[in-house]
Image (cartoon, rainbow, N blue to C red; front, side, top):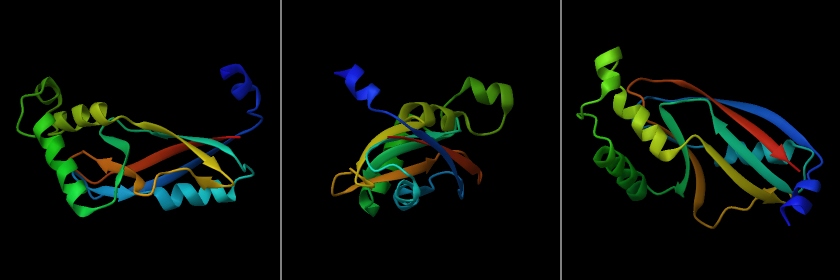
Length: 147
């Protein structure tokens, strides 16, 4: 089955998107930007791979609702508290040891199918970039459209 799926992939288009964040706890809904790239591509059906070139931010799918976004921020604080003790801090003294841990928990990549140029997200699903670093950052999202 996998062989037949892979043999149907005839094209890969690469794109990059740039985002600016406000720093720690900033969450950007990037669904529309990703959807726009899919619509501009030559692909009708396939999947898109998203990869964030970062070790202090992450990509996730979540409902875009303020309560859930606050719950997510609070969960990240419980999992990797800013006030925790991190070896990274001892080496670099840059205040973002917790940011690296949060990024590794969430991850920096997603793969999402699309059909007829539309992302096949569920009713409430949105693609978001979560910033964990303590300062504003410029982020590069690498996209590969597989069709």
